[in-house]
Structure formats: C-alpha cells, structure tokens
Length: 270
Ligand code: G3P
Ligand code: CA
Image 1: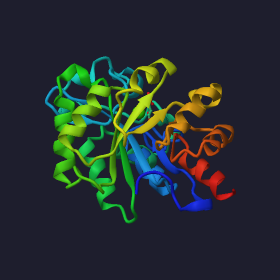
Image 2: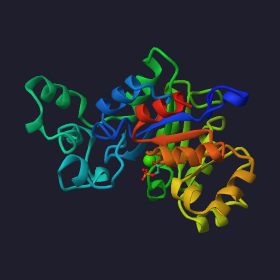
Image 3: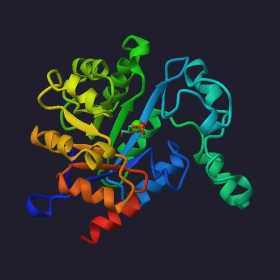
Image 4: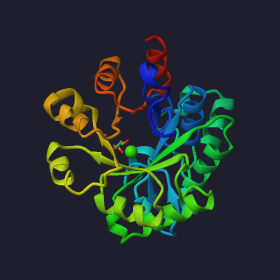
C-alpha cells in the first residue's frame, strides 16, 4: 500500500521518516533509520547519490562538509573511501556520549548504501515502505536511474506492488524511471508554484505530487489547485502540529517528517 493508512473516515496520512529520525539522530545513517522504525515510522525517505565507482549511497548534500566534516564531493570518492568517514558525530558530539554509545555511533554512523537500506526494509518484521529521492540525476546521463532500477530489480521491487516509490524534482529522472521500472510509483517533487505550472501539462496521470509544506501552508489557492487535481499528495517536511493540521485539511496521503515519533503521537491522539 502506498500512501494513507486506514480507510473511509479513519484515513490518515502515512508517516514517512525524512532521512530517518533525523531530528534526533544523524540523518541518513543506519542509526537514524533504526530509530525511525523503533518510533513506528510507516515508511522511510532517503536521498541517493552516485559514488565515483558507481554505488548509490544515502547522502543529501553534494559535498561532505556538513555531515562528514570532510572537504570533498560524494561523486569524486569511491565507496571504500566514504566508508572511512564518520557521518554521525556532527549531530551527537562524541564528547557527550559514553563509551558504549560511541561504539554504537561508529557502527551505525558509517555511510549507508541504498542496497543496505533496501535490506533493512526487506528484513524488517513489519511492513515498511521506502521513498527514494534521486538528487541531481541529470548530471549522469541516466546512470543514477539505471543503478537504481538495478538495485530495485535485485530485490524484485521493480514492478507494481513493491514497497518502494521514487521521488525527484527532475521530470527527466522520473520519465527514465518509468521506462526502467514501469510499475514503481513516482512522486513529482514541487518546490515552487512556477515549477508546477511548467510540469502540470506533462506529468503522468498516475504520478503522485510532492509539494513542500510551505506551498500548502502559505499559498492556499495553490494548495486548493493541487488538491483539485485528485492526485495523491505527499508533503515534506512536516515537523509541527500546525503543519500536520494543514496536511489533514487537504487530505494528503503521506507526511514526510524529521520527527516520525512525534507526528505518530499527534495522529494517535486525534
Ligand atoms: O521528501 C522530499 C524532500 O526530502 C525534498 O527536499 O532537500 O530534504 O531532499 P530535501
Ligand atoms: Ca530528500
């Protein structure tokens, strides 16, 4: 199932952990995803980038300074080099942790490959979905999408009914994914009203729309226009009760949040 949980009057949005439980834990680390699952997240969001030797890794930024405290680009380093880096301690300084927590941080804070994250989803003891965002894919002439389709195929998840969906701000990337993995749901991310104006005539009939919460919250006429398309809407990044209320008002099918535990708690109280 992709999107809302429940049916009829009880329909509520699916809660998707943005980069894992990234409010509490260093984003895109195994630790962040384990925490999100512990908190009850129903789906996980990740960004993927290509390494110099062609692996897809879960990293948001093009460069490594913010999350690995190192100068350099993900795209110019091989996986083995990235594997030497520490993607965790920028968030939770080691000085604040005891020895056991430091060891765990080291183990769970290495660069995370998409393949490993797919294994986590496949092996988890309840059903979980994965929303994979391709970052700046047009630079690589389709290689990101080919690698992604291969990774999904390795799990048998390149057709309809798979617990995955692919998101992008790039229309070209989503078109490629549709050719490479025809059954996989697609989410067209939207970050500006103008962006949607250009996309509206061309996006596929079954594509999901993925606006930022600011578009729904701050431009109600535009929000109404998106809702009136009748398409499923998945919204990022929903971290407050007020923003959750906006999403509920528009009947969105999934909320992507840094704080899955908090958002699930709010939904349970409704
Ligand atoms: O879920 C979509 C959202 O993650 C897009 O923005 O910058 O957090 O990848 P960003
Ligand atoms: Ca993202």
